[in-house]
Amino acid sequence: MVEVGLCASCTQSRTVKGKHSTYWVCRRSLTDPTFPQYPRLPVLQCRGYEPKKQPPA
Ligand code: SF4
Image (cartoon, rainbow, N blue to C red; front, side, top):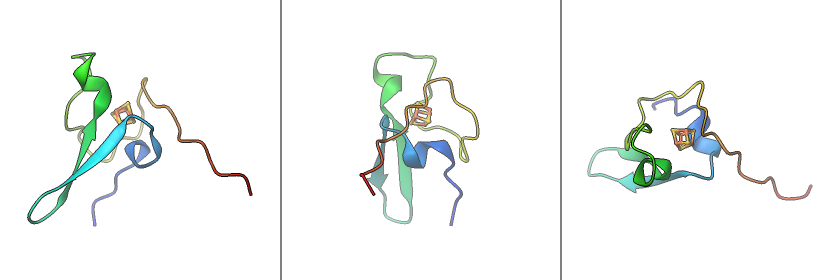
């Protein structure tokens, strides 16, 4: 399994299921071309990272 890194917990990510694997798409790339549509994984640092809110414990 591929390490995803920050995208896994970022509000800007979404996944696209392919035939053989799952692709991670960065939605910031839709409005900001400096972000890659398909980030190179694992993403360890990202200036656009926006953590998903954790549900209350
Ligand atoms: S903003 Fe960064 S961390 Fe978030 S989905 Fe895009 S590339 Fe991944």
